[in-house]
Image (cartoon, rainbow, N blue to C red; front, top):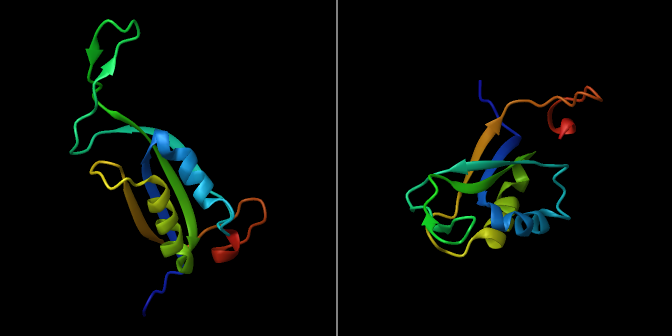
Length: 120
C-alpha cells in the first residue's frame, strides 16, 4: 500500500525583525490560515552583542530572538509558499533561519468536523 500525502506542514524559523515581511508576502495566497509564535534559539552563528538597558555596557545574549510560522497547506502550494518566505526574509547571509517541511496524514476542523484537505 502506497500512502500519498496531499497536505504538508511548513515550519519557518525567521528572525523576529523579518516577521512582518513574511506576513506581507503570504497575504493573498490561498493558505486558509497560519499560526506563529515567538521563539528563542541558537545556531552556528554567534548572537550579536547588544547594549545594556542603561547603554553603558554590552552583553551577548545566549539565544537569538526568532519567530516560528506554522502552516498546513495542500502539497501543490509548498513551493510557492517556500519561495515567498525566502524572498521576503532572506538576505543571503548564514544564520537567518530554517524552513522544515513534513507530511501531514490528516487534519480535523474542530468546529465543522471536516477532515483532510477540506479542514485546511
